Length: 439
Ligand SMILES: *[C@@H]1O[C@H](CO)[C@@H](O)[C@H](O)[C@H]1NC(C)=O
Ligand SMILES: *[C@@H]1O[C@H](CO)[C@@H](O)[C@H](O)[C@H]1NC(C)=O
Ligand SMILES: *[C@@H]1O[C@H](CO)[C@@H](O)[C@H](O)[C@H]1NC(C)=O
Ligand SMILES: *[C@@H]1O[C@H](CO)[C@@H](O)[C@H](O)[C@H]1NC(C)=O
Image 1 (cartoon, rainbow, N blue to C red):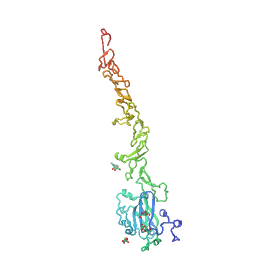
Image 2: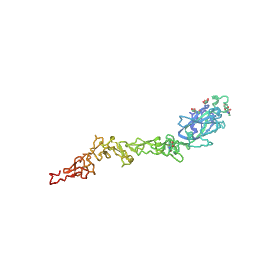
Image 3: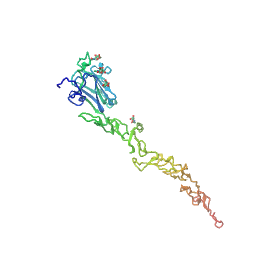
């Protein structure tokens, strides 16, 4: 440029050096206000990323001190990654300047803050130092270290050509500024192993080759920008990051078509020996249970219908005269428990699916009778053993051939001696010569 010593001015296009210049490759650069230290550059990412390294290429001298910090919660809280200074113990006395032992140690490094070179100097930061062996790259500590939503670079001290040694007044600093040509941030979108590609977040336009976007194209029935949860209605297993041999695919809840949402319940999951933890919400069609698999009280499962049929639960049909418990019935068939789907709870002397019949030996079904029916009072000697002892409704007993009376306790005229005999009574057999009649 011919115009060598102009003032940097962001309101004049030709004299401005906006921050965009460091991201989109241009011939120009970003430049800070002359003489200002403690300048910070903040990069807001569109989602959560796995950050691996940062390369900053400076147009002029590298800073005499700087800090790289990150946030994993969209800028609410920040933690430092690394400090850089020409003299760490002087500039950052609180930070260790020893060598790195663990990847998550926060240290201060001196090698990137020299005044040399005066142009094109770089600062390189790698989150995982290649010299440090990582036992478990999927371990929580490593994952925590890599996750970022924002990156901040604080340029805290200007390098000067020694003319500030005696006097660091701002008029001396006025000749100096920070200037960056290029900022390379490398990493990948962060999908917990549930995606193999990433697309732009809604509202973010795809710009330039090599730009990684933040919205994971989720597989394994997961969803979210980072595939960080199971898809709706897929909560039968707990969400979990994918592993090399086990994708931990989210599983659909089984609600038999009677619910449209479900949730995961850890207690249920543990109780089933880790096989199923999905609980259906708001079962419809008179169903209930964590899989909407049974019928609500006062309904029973129609064995003729498919369990997914909206009509599968039918209202109990109990005769109020012979039923107990207000007409509740067995919800399903369970022979071990002696339950038959639709069977009403009958009073003691009542039977039938609807409880509308007297048991054998009883008659006179009645609402006011707590037992439902009363016992037939037939004379056991006079009744036919093959049939019900008495009429269910009238209570009349069924008498043997030569027996009569409501209770079958009398012999017919001309017969006598009621007994267990097959005909009940014996004929009088009076001699027609001597008897007036056969009685
Ligand atoms: C930058 O911040 C440090 C520490 O807060 C302070 O000592 C220094 O004076 C500041 N520099 C300028 C130029 O404001
Ligand atoms: C760094 O600063 C400390 C404290 O001011 C000083 O004692 C030390 O000599 C300096 N080191 C170098 C290499 O200048
Ligand atoms: C970096 O700069 C920001 C904003 O200027 C400030 O809030 C923060 O405390 C600085 N971080 C460090 C480690 O000095
Ligand atoms: C079941 O899952 C829980 C929670 O994920 C886990 O702590 C436990 O070890 C698992 N039990 C079995 C038998 O796999």
